[in-house]
Length: 347
Image 1 (cartoon, one colour):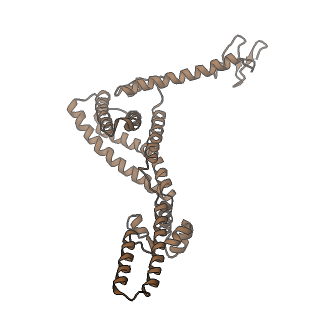
Image 2 (cartoon, helix red, strand yellow):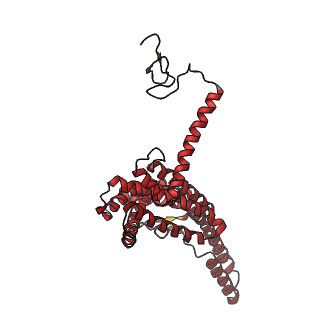
Image 3 (cartoon, one colour):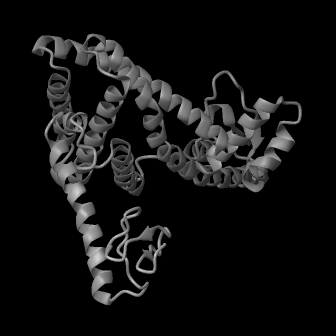
């Protein structure tokens, strides 16, 4: 390197003496110290560049099929990447929906609290029965004793006739597996592991695991519901390649690459996430009718997008929407079920 040359401080690439920016990494050549004006300028440039991509992506995704069409034309840097767009919008929608649902207590339930209250009612009933038996012998009058029996029966009816055990099989339905009945005191005072060791001594590995997770799902019902809800994004993400595969089969004569169907799937779901984020937020102000409007908009958007991307007639596009919708429901049930099962076992 000649005496007139210099070196990039970022990647150590030799630079000509007149070079202002590195030819390799693009960093501006400085002494290593920058002015406040330069620092703020770099920050604003990055932010406006990022905002420009987000704005252009938002403008394109509103028009059915345009974002996918632009991407196929090679305009990759102009817009956010399909995968990133899918993940960001999915997290946004899941966060808004979870906040709405769990705040309103529409999902999950505090099973443990209810069982503790039921346990307390059971002990109260036992105490009342004991008092009833003690006092009943003091009265020799049949009418008085019948009255005491009536009061005891009425109290038992009010307290829902609780038994001395919790019937786990009635609380949790796990295929054909029968969970054991557990003492109320044990259920309240013992951990899920202790209950497994105490009540599942003769069980096989999977039975013991189901018993442990079943107890945990009751004791931590709200946490389990939120945990499983948080995994729905993953379920949808892993479903996309399979949806793209079926799209390729349905549109096999269009001669499109598999990745093109995958990109369309990502873009359409990104639009769905944005649409139903707005629906969720506006539902509190506009009422439940906005949900129906959301589904109508989603259908119209899909119809126009498919017609624009795959260039087929109105009737054929409508027919294929029905086929895709049927396949979509099957995939959704399969992947949500698998996700829920795995999430239940790993919770």
